[in-house]
Image (cartoon, rainbow, N blue to C red; front, side, top):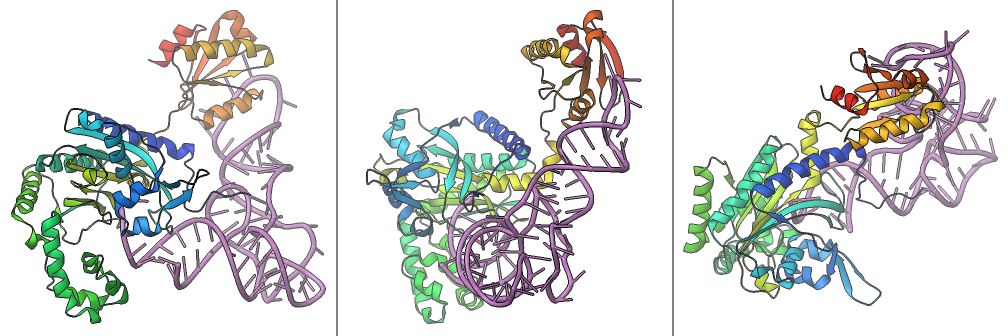
Length: 416
RNA sequence: GUGGAUGUAGCUCAGUUGGUUAGAGCGCUAGUUUGUGGCACUAGAGGCCGUGGGUUCGAGUCCCAUCUUCCACCCCA
């Protein structure tokens, strides 16, 4: 038996309808917030992610599916969505569209990492991006939309955590201060912290080692180093959230693992599962970094598998797969032609109808109709055809009515 | 990349100190007479016991390797 590759998942019919329900719901929200869907290639030139996501990040350093194609080009399966969207924004001249521009995507992502709860090698992100505005109003709009998605899907125990990681200048100042604070006692830290000291100092604050945690007490907070502009921006975002009844918690440890973020970063974290279901932030430098005009932007991405796992935990019973309106049972093979014609006619009228396609006994047909959840069963034999009258049985109650054998009469009976 | 657990029918699992043709429940298919489902009963299909080595007269059971799945670290959605 050939198995599917590690970290991949089949989505079977009995789960796909949950996906469809959630995707429809989110699509609807996107549409009333003015976001348009777009799609980009599954693979991109590796260079895009090196420059976009950042070549010192874990995602780029050890998690990318990178290979040479037959023409010798270095190709990478996208590990996240924003870089490709930004590439298209620049390459396809989307900067000339009315600004601000709002787009969203729903695409598979690929990351070579070890599998565990809420983490796959192929997974799906539904993300939204706003291009062309650096205003805190855009930050609010995107966070509020994410919040609405969570609430419209009735997923409890989700907390919004926000932070500001400042702009280039205040972040540099902060890193300097942090390096001074930690540097004086770096020998007391664990090995991973030591290795991070130079290239990613801020991550040391995230270490879970007891000794390191102790050493981190009293460390400078990014919040205190924000420049006036960044501070005001962050205060405005918080004010907007407060005045619109969206509760949040400032978590100074949110840093985000992708290099392109600045100013506002946020996560919607499930307290049940302990993982982030929506993560996002502002990325005002990325478009220019990738060769476009200087353009502010902000966005988020939803981890669909995580969202769906949580949704199923609380709400599966609220979503139902489509069941046949009616099953047409046939008494014997003399009726196949007639039944097939009737089935086609009813489908033409938009009715979900099934009939026997494996030439089984009447009893077996009833059993099948019951198992697939047909609401009604019509039985057709030679008598019914000659008398033009049929029996229609409601499966749940067992009630039987007699009605005229006519597609329009059947249709209105089913709609009653 | 590191550490821990796991792997027997489609699913959930039994399988006794290694010993004949590998089991159950659910699910699937057919039947329990003549044109009607759910319940019950009967029968059937379906397993290279994750894979490859090794020990042994003999391995689902023991040993090694490897892969998968799950969990944690790391990181992320």
